[in-house]
Length: 171
Image (cartoon, rainbow, N blue to C red; front, top):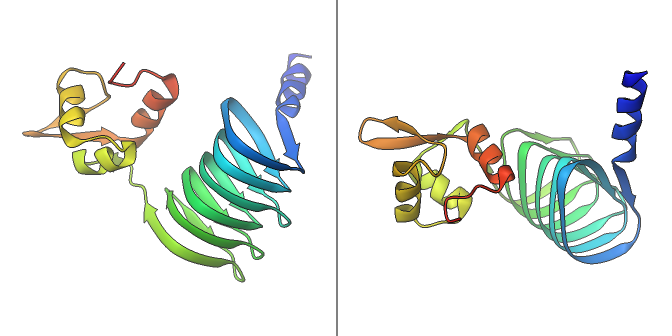
């Protein structure tokens, strides 16, 4: 019985958007989001995000797994995987751990592959924070860090969890 209840709770977290929207959307809990219409703005989600084949999106997108079948312009950060379906037309700056480009997909832009560990320079770029702040946070234990000789390294998974928890170093 508990299994059925859990399954029903997961089903309730599916959002299917078939409308024109603009603005900033942030989902703090995992959700399966599908956009079939037009969206412009900023979208931050946990879970899976599907940009449907009829969707047109002009946005800055952050998500775990992002599947694109429609048209998108902007920036995409897929923390786990970015999948471009055969009907995808993407003009973007993309960052991801894993990239799947199906035959027929159009990708124009740049792609930066995320590694399991960041150097201090990579983390500064990833967080869009200056180098001295990162060094201070690491030294004071405000950011998850591993001392390596005279420098630091940062596990990507720990950084993503730290960001999701809201315990950023400047707070």
